[in-house]
Length: 351
Image (cartoon, rainbow, N blue to C red; front, side, top):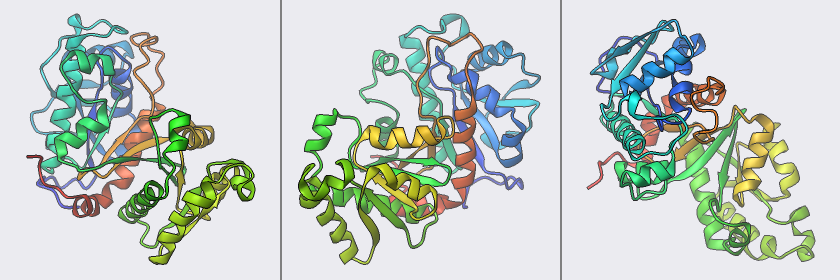
């Protein structure tokens, strides 16, 4: 990978945003940063407010020094040290765990902006994000629906989508944040064809030179020849044939009750799910804590937990950091593909 960094340390350097400071993000971030499995494989710098990070470290009585760095390249990557790039927006005394606030939203936004700049400037190899609260960022003036939209604007990405990674299987989506009724209405040939091409491109970017993609059916038993619905016949199968005609290795529509199992067994490199829960249920049943979200289409590498701020347990010391660990390890594993990511999705800063 190419970088402006000059450190002789060949471990990937990752920026971990601490998310909404009133949620569990700071807690799972500090615990992840000191795990020996993490420090063996990567150097980590937390991006957020210093006093918030210190409060989280004290909550868990971590035997690690919290250190401010002005350059992520100075991150030590040791289990006895938590390196922080301080965004200087909020103080711990101003943030009550479990409560939505404008100040918390500003802190979360500042961390995302700082980490993204570092990645765009090649000062870090990837960004790993802890959860944010939409109400809080909206109260702080953000016009974005969430992380993905904000990152798209910050990087100038024309389009981005989500790829789940769980136990080597990669899952993509034709439709996502919409009702099931609307998702069914959106299953059209052109949309499915576009989703197939995006998935194939992403699989190539992330190391599958000749990707094998399975397209999940929408209806039970793949529609039973039209008896359970015609979406497979009229929309999905023609989109699959379009891809095959261009030489792609695409199977489908494959009944959804078997396609994910087949992918886990190694038959396919990726699966295109047709709607949100079709892919989410499969991934999270296989390994809830090990399911990692990767934003595809950005000129930077970004992984994330796939859970929320958990305001109900924030500040109690009950939060599990297993998903944050999985997202961090995934970023380390995927970082060798960074130049492919930049060359495929472009690296120009937004206008």
